[in-house]
Image (cartoon, rainbow over all chains, first blue to last red; front, side, top):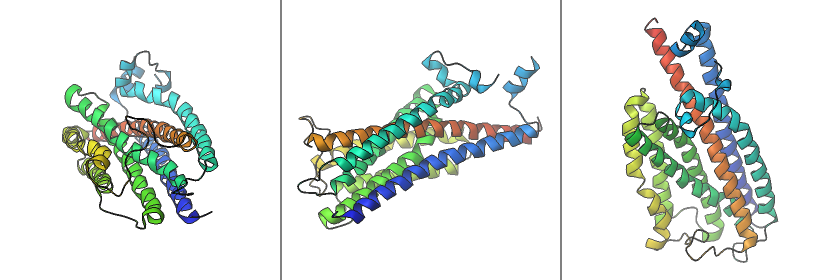
Length: 55
Length: 249
């Protein structure tokens, strides 16, 4: 196929960029959940969550 | 009360970050499935489409370039709506939305520029020209990068929200410039061939793959945006808890 290299590079760049974005949101979510779990383990909890549990 | 047990009965309920997170948890798997299906169908249609009589096989680059370019502008438009939400209604999720959208918009813009360049070299004989369309899209990329830098430079989102919203609104002037640049100035970039008052000028055999890919990119954008908004809410929650812990409460 003519221009195969240009077409392949375009689709490869698109795949890398879109998969990169998906990876970014997935790993960011894991990081934030780990942060929250670590804070909870230290006994630091949102006031609303603590109040709901006290009731 | 667990987040998953929260129900959303009205659109207004989504203004509550905890309810929004619960809502995202429920709709994200559905959106991800629809996105994967649309990409599968779109890619098959893209490679089954006939070659263009002038562009040859490089027409296939259009099936990723054009949706990326559209999304780069749509993402900024979503950010503009969010900026209005921040400035006018002080909606709790408006700034979260704008912040979450900026990196996604930047990536779509990079992709539009890169794939456009990869199409331009064989078709125009050059990777890049400083014509009005390419230059205005490059300015859009700089605006995205500037907004990301601003958001990272200011730790407290409540302080950066208004500044960021004003900058987004000012920058929106570039969106109609990008759209109409090919009509207002002599450009190497061809004029619009899909969104036109007199209808698309592309043959249906190439238009349908393009529209399916554009829909796939659009659903992917909303999926990523909702996921990134959830992450941003959690990031702010972590920051608030750390401040709370530092105060010793």
